[in-house]
Length: 343
Image 1 (cartoon, rainbow, N blue to C red):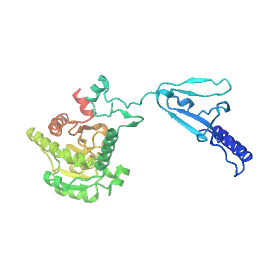
Image 2 (cartoon, rainbow, N blue to C red):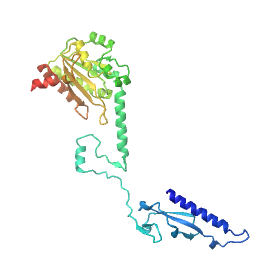
Image 3 (tube, rainbow, N blue to C red):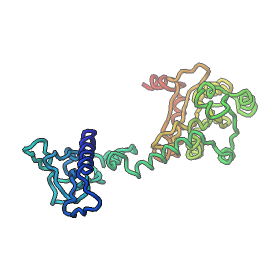
Image 4 (tube, helix red, strand yellow):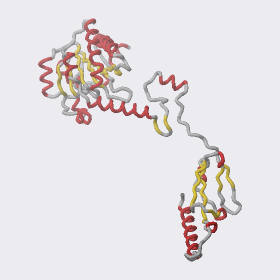
């Protein structure tokens, strides 16, 4: 209701009250009930015609009645399919638009969208309820987001490390917040880690395997055992020597350069948890590099990514990594150098 309408109603009420006060009979005189008529304004609020829902009738439409001073009509039936508005004495009439029932979006989607959904886990064709996502879609989104946060801030269990028979070292990062904000610290080993690696690891190995939770502890928990065991078996079948495997807490990819410098490894295979997304929080990658040393450029690294149950199966990834390592040792190059030599 606009200010003009409020002002008009107020003015009419005040005028009526003034007239009643001037014409008020004495208390001893009975006033017939039929003479007690009040003026009221009819406000038509027709659901089907929202453009004229707040229009007010002109003074010419004022009637006398025993009904309340202001009467609001909410008409939704077929008996009241028109709303009226009189802007002048000629009382123009407007025909309302038929009422249409609101429908939620259909669950069925087109054939092209159905075909696309079979080939991608992306959120397509999920529909909506009015202007908002459907409840099921929204809850699934919140669940995936929570899983991604848990993957970043989670930790790999001691039980898994014991099962794999690997020891643990740390980078220069002290906590998760520092790991996220200071990537440079995650690329260097702590002083204690350097001493432990030099004392426990085999020097000058053909292949050195290392592991790290990286940005997803869930990825290591779910995939590393199958990948590691399959890789071990593959390298053993190819008669390729393996060094002493160990685990690095809160490590970054470039940490393989410092480890290569310490152990003088010919090839390093680095199994690390990748940044989680809203499709999967358990994706792991394997970075491979020929003779990584301090100052190695990213173009010399190779990666097999998307290792998880919804991507590359872990056992298949482990077996494939063995063939990649064999090729690297044969050509004595990795990354773009390997591509150039193969071509």
